[in-house]
Amino acid sequence: MIQLKAGVRAVQSTPIVTRDGKPLGMFSTHFKTPHRPDDRELKLLDLLANQVTDIVDRKHYEDSKKEVLNDLRKTESLLNAVIIHHQI
Image 1 (tube, rainbow, N blue to C red):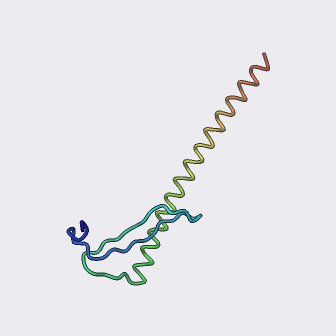
Image 2: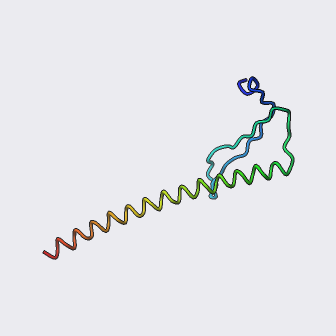
């Protein structure tokens, strides 16, 4: 109802899925006139969804890489504390 009031007459939804198949969300394109996307438009929407997936996957990778580095730093600190304690 809200979309009709806003003038939307057609919607094309493209799923956004990680490379390992986990759903992330939906990318929706709204048209003000009745519209059926042609093959070119569908390919462009798929390309855009793939780019979003790449960005999200890269962000997840960077976040997990930071977590691993933080864990390694903590482990290094603990090992250094043990080594210093045993040297005394």
